[in-house]
Image (cartoon, rainbow, N blue to C red; front, side):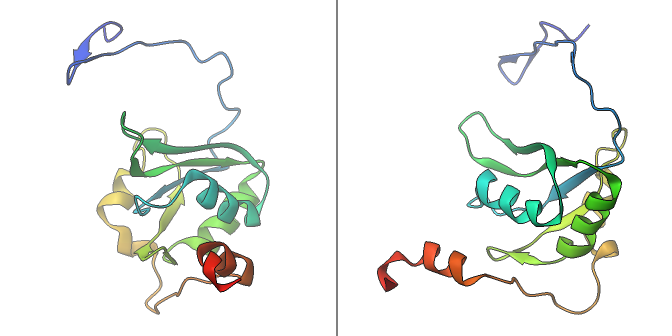
Length: 140
């Protein structure tokens, strides 16, 4: 029904996923990511909480970030740690929101009410000395 259909002047192509995920429990949905944040930077930040098995920062056809995506960790414990550790934190000038990935709702509840998981105190971005040097090469 959808395979071959046209949407926004683009043709949809459906394929069977030959390696579907074992479980959605260790999956995290993130959003409100700055358009300037790279997939590499965000993935590196998430790797602090565990082994990443799959990562996707969704992008437009022109390569610009949509500011959201998913990350599947090796286990649920790591996913929970990432949510607890990063949800509500500032990242490159924007408050990052993380929640457990819901394959049916695909994050719609969290995306429509991002403040629910965010503690009242303001969490500031923690930038390591290495990251400061990378972002300011003239100081060397």
